[in-house]
Image (cartoon, rainbow, N blue to C red):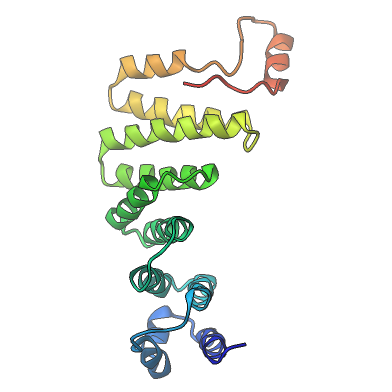
Length: 215
């Protein structure tokens, strides 16, 4: 173990003594550590980010994530991880403009991690909804629905979660008086063939695992 790794572990152990993040931020030992112009290698900064996240010290986690990004040239995988982390943390802190900012940066990378893309889109929808950006909110609901369908086709999620995505989009369109759009969305809803009033036929359709068609 390097000297800097030991120092970081000691700081994280010290952080456990503080119930409030703000109190830890005022700690002289920690302030002196942060004031250094350069701290550790990639793995050591990641250790700080993970440690702060485990303590639920969101602001410090954001600080180290941004510092990681600014102090080095990051590869695609690192940018994906940092932007995802920042989008999640800013959403938790109810800083929705910042959550949107880093969510958009994440999406620009074209990540192929579908569950993560879906999580970011969920946070974007939540943020735009709270900020009352209705049109943009619907746009991201549509994008998330497409991702959920892909995930279902890949066997990552079940059809119920796809139905939830459909429900969210249709409800949003309906609330915003976009009735023709809501009808169009419902026509694309072909998860089950329920052209029967027989309960046994309905149950049989629901029991099938056939993947949904693409939008």
